[in-house]
Image 1 (tube, rainbow, N blue to C red):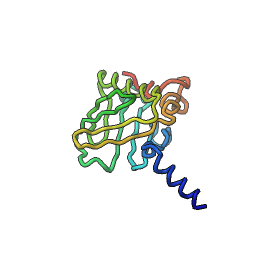
Image 2: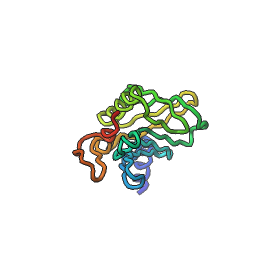
Image 3: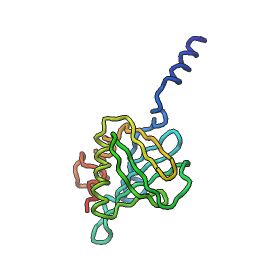
Image 4: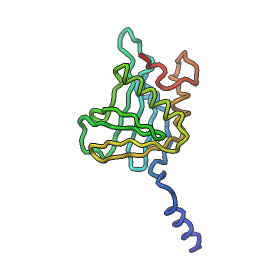
Length: 170
């Protein structure tokens, strides 16, 4: 019995740091009336959300997509230059109060590139860094392809297999 306990402790010590990014991506389309969200949390209780207003009539309101990061490690909620690193490639964004709203064509290109990188990465994790504050958060890529790539708003006419942000093109 004692040997089994020592074995468990040894396995816990030898487990790589992926444990801080142990959660899976999950979809959410119910609570925000037409807003699709892909959400990932990590063990330090940080949360990263990619969202898209999927079924908005562009005659009345432009389609909006963006990201939100909440982390206890962040001291300032003002403007923060953040970089999201997926498979060794850095995607820079400026977050304000913990969120980024994709509101330009150039922003759309890098935003869509990031989502595709998250979907297609062969890695197990990605990192969000806030260099000004020396903060970084690591998140899992488990189910990212499934959630970001196969999401469809209930009642949508678009076939499954598009991307979460497919309806958010400018």
